[in-house]
Amino acid sequence: MAKSAEELTWKDLEIGAIITEPGSASQYQTGSWRTERPIIDLDKCTKCGLCYVFCPDMAIKVNDEGYPETDLFYCKGCGICVVECPKQAITMLEEEG
Amino acid sequence: MKEKRIGVEVSQAIAIATKLADVDVISAYPITPQTHIVEGVAELVADGELDADCIPVESEHSAMSACLGSSAVGARTFTATAGQGLELMHEVLYVASSMRLPLVMAVANRALSAPISIWGDHSDVMAVRDTGWIQIFAVNGQETFDNVLCAFRIGEDHRVLLPVMVHLDGFHLTHMIEPIFIPEQSEVDRFLPPYQYPLPLDPDKPVSMGGMGAPNIYFETKRAQAEVLTAAKEVILEAWKEFGDIFGRHYSPVEGYHREGAKVLLLTMGSFSETAMTAIDALRDEGKEVGLIVPRLWRPFPFKEFRQAVKGADVLIVLDRALSFGGPGGPVCSEVRSALFNEGKKPKVIGFVGGLGGRAVSPDGFKEIINRGIEVAHKGSEQEFEVFGVRE
Ligand code: SF4
Ligand code: SF4
Image (cartoon, rainbow over all chains, first blue to last red; front, top):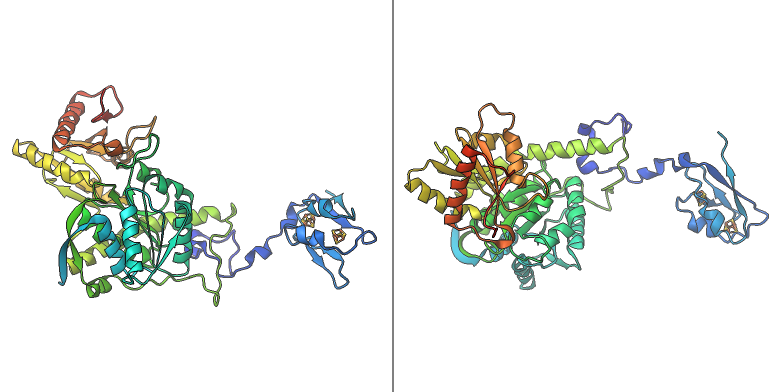
């Protein structure tokens, strides 16, 4: 799309504001909402994958070794992963500023 | 022109119209007094006369939701409801118009609970007034039939792409057997081209519909929607013109009856209008300069045609079949009053509420309304609006 959302006038919109490039929600930085970030202690982690399953924003990826990694572009800091981890391997750290 | 005239229940005539329109999908939940419409369509499909999918659902909310989906893939879609059913659809009605899906719905106008009433009035319509649909009121069976065909043509026009409601009074029209002209398939095909949605849901060319609208874009979407509904009037006029050219029956946004030179005008919508005409005839015989106007197009409201229609009148008496509780009386009356407010020379607008929950208004009743309206226009009244036909 040539114009950003802020530049679009009502005349620029597709009928019914249909999105012709699907998947555009991936451009939305839910990470900007975060006040705390999850820190994963890999020494405690058993690679069970529950944090990956429960994260509502797909902000946890599983790396090649099978360990979870947070994607801070999307992680909104909800803390669900902390509650779901059966090994108490995740703690929340307050963001600075 | 090839047409045959048959005696048929108006609900059944609507079913025949969906067949002639070659509808692809029907999803509806039966509710009195709309039931015969859905039964009629289902029967045509079951008998193999109409090649369409009937989606039976557990509620009107689901019916309208199913219609969104089918319209979005590019299927010509029809539904029908009444009263409580229309209210249960309420939130989905906004989605249909906002997503610009041109499905067609016949609404068998019915009163709202409580107490439970299956009988007719316009409370259901007025509660969905601002849902962004094109809304057409039919006065009789032929108009209903014709405007169901017109509704597909109007809604599906690429300059419009909006859903359309065709309103017909519950029982007074739905259950009435009338002689109705039914055109040949070839004639209907001339009038109604196949439905082609410009950006359908299609796995080969994916799109997303009904996405999130944050404050940085939501308002623009609503502005676009408002604009297209207002601009739809020109397409509606064009469709009615072409319908008239092909079928010989002509429709306009505001109909008049003995309007010329009338000093006193009555305004009614829907099937009551024909009863009102009998009263107008009687009053004309008594030498009174009275006339009738009947808005056929409710949304988009035809401001220009309405102002033109009341020109020269001193008194405009509006009968509403719905009540805005704690407000200025009837919704139609408040709209026409505000449409005239800034005009230089304008008639005095006197509002009546009557005919709720199937309560009939006879020709004598309309004479009473007109006479009382004239009296109020000259002498004034303590009340914001008049109520007709209730036991005091
Ligand atoms: S804090 Fe919430 S959003 Fe972030 S990784 Fe954990 S579950 Fe996902
Ligand atoms: S839930 Fe806890 S133990 Fe399981 S993978 Fe995530 S961090 Fe590791």
